[in-house]
Image (cartoon, rainbow, N blue to C red):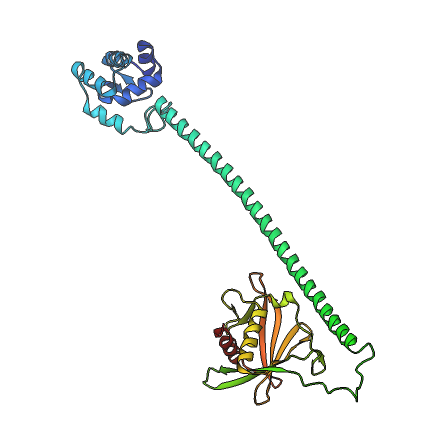
Length: 349
């Protein structure tokens, strides 16, 4: 029987491992002749010389291509065996080849573990970045919550200030009235000079409605000290904090619209007063109905007009004064008429 070698025999002859012999066959399949393909695979006698030559070439540092050229010069290559090894059957060696998967080289393992290490480092970096992002998000949420709490406290403080300032103004007005009367109310003086009538400033404001109609408003302001309006003290007025708050109005969509530059209620009223003084109209004073401050006016025809202002907060948390409604002779006008009135006054700024 012809002499044959197994992987183990060739490994012992070349003084290398069986895995190395299988690597030789995988790299140079056509040069290592096979005798039988059973288990274990047996190679012809010439396979020993081929494996020794491959070992020597690799020991000299030659590449696979250089080694293949050397083998072609000294040995015959079998194309059939080369194709067979390129597409191995599942019936061939199962150790440590896996059903035709080939031998796993050390170079492949090194690359695999290097790539796996890089992936693990990347995942660790990603986990660290996610943890830091979570910490920053938590800090941001905490800061936002504190900001909301501070804004709420500011609104509560401002509301309390308005409530305290208004009664103080009422008390001052009552005290002034009492002092003027000597503490015993007004006294008739039949022998004294007659008190001259109060001086009034008048101004006419024309408001054009969307339908093209025009309404005139006579603004009248009493200059006499102690003058009253329907039994109310003339000194009754909103607090400075209320007057310094920006004025706004709502449009048909319910959005808040203000005056450019965040004009305050006091400045808005000053514009009407200035227009009244230029037109000779009369201007009445303020009075309060619970949480609403009402500024009343009279037209030349005698109609009574009242502008209602309330303190409110926008969706962004800004404290503003809302021109809520306009009444004519006690009846509320339409939102469109109120918006047109607001626009007419704003255009005079």
